[in-house]
Each structure stands twice: as structure tokens, then as C-alpha cells.
Length: 332
Image (cartoon, rainbow, N blue to C red; front, side):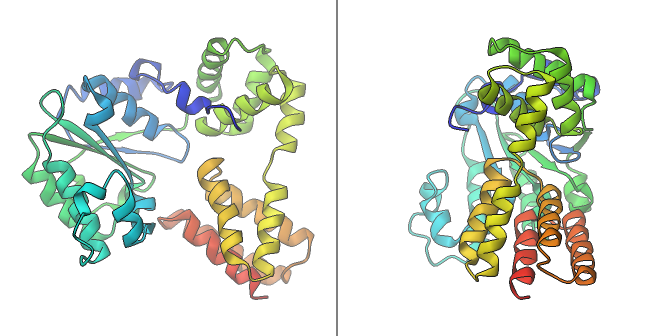
């Protein structure tokens, strides 16, 4: 999509979050600073809720809300960390640091800086399940040292990956997947704001198709409107059938089979990061294409798919596990 994404232009306020109990939890969390862990399935709105809560607390959220995607953070090279405008001023002259030390230093220094306005700032650590144990131990100490001036919000789909001392310093907030009815309410509000034509049956079709993934529902609704100029059930069916990842999955597999793994990973990054597909969705599509093209023995494919599915469920980095699958397929 070339136009701004609706998930960004229609970012919700706390009162707009679809889950009533989530709104209640955040209202009871008070005005901070208090450390929070928002945990729930992918696409349930954890990050959107954390941002909404932080915006409600700060006069200048542009400067007093610091966001770090942990999965991306640890994937970055030392050079990428030093060149990232969010972290460059922390790491100038520190090229001799180990990468892990750089990561710890950035978080510690971010927590130590005074807020631009108000009494405290918020550091949002997204995909917190990707944190290594040593980083979590260091983060626990940072929380203790800067508890009066810095609030941490962690989002994760796997709270069990967080060490007990870290969990004990955070108020846990469960974030369930929104129901179809709740998703419909969100979509209708966005469609009205966009002055887009729609039929209730079309909105409900998109909400059901997303299966509890609010991010996917919003992106799908935008895709249908931009393609068909309206959101009807017929238009939604036709557009969503066409915009699935199958073509790009095939291209990604072709690159992997040809040994062009950087090109394959580039497509994978687009699917996961730009288009918002979950690792499980990409896995399902890869399996379908691999099976239809007989790229790998059926028994071997079943075993490999089971291994990758387990890794996605228990692991911390969808990109890493799907890339492993591509490497396995490319080796056959």
C-alpha cells in the first residue's frame, strides 16, 4: 500500500480500544510511573494499547515515549545500532563495545535521561520475549535505579519467557484477541473517518477473515477499499483472495532454491514487517506452495513443518525460524 496505513493514521486512544476489560485495566493502572507487561496473542492490539496509554500520560509523547522493538534490536549489527538515529548519540565513540553491551547501554542511558515534560517518561519494549536472560537481569536493575523517572511497558506474547524478578516489578495486563463484534466496531469507526462506502456484511466478512487479529483486519479493510473503492462482502472476498502472500511466497521459495538467501530473506522481511503477516501464516503458505510444487518429500515436509511450528510457538523470532525453514528447503 502506498498511502498511509490505517493502523498508523487511526491509532486508538485508550477509550477506543475494543476490549472493555483492557480499557478498565489501563484506567486502573493510574497515571504512572508504573511498569506494565501487556501479554496476549499476535495482532490483539498490545502495542497499540501501550502507545495509547503512554500518549494519555505525556504532554509530549513524541519525546517522552521511547519505543524499542526488542526482536529488531537484537537482530541489528553494531554498525546499524551506531547509525540508528534513536541511539547514535548514546553510542558515539563506543565502537569498541560488544553488541550486547551496546544494547544494555542504550536502554540504561535512555532510562537515565530526564523527561522533556512532566515527571517521567515511558520506554516501550515491544516483543519482550526476545530478551536474553542477561539483558533481562540488567533491565531489572535499570528499573530499580530509575523507577521514579522512567516507566517501562513490555509487550509480549509469551510472558513465561520473562524472568521472575522482572515480572515481579511489572503489573500484568492480559490482552485477549478481540471478538468479531469488537473488530467490526473498530473497522466501522475507521471506515466512517475515511468516508469509505461499506456494507455491514462486508465489514463482518473482513472481521471474521482476520480471526481475532485486529491489525490484519484493519490492513485488509484498507486493501479492499483502496482496490474496490468500497467494502462489500463480494469485494472483500475477491480482493482478499487475490492479495494473499502466495505469489511472493513462491518468489521467496524460488530464491531459496537458487541459493539466493538474501533475496529470500528480503521478501520474508516484507511479509513479516511491512505487511504484518504472522510467522504461522507465512509457514502455512510456505507449506502449501512446497507441497503443491513437490519441493520436498511429504514425510520430511511434515516433520520439518512440525519443528518450525513448535519453534514459532515457543521461540522469540519468527524471522529466524522461517529463515531456517527456507534454508532447509533450499538444501533439498
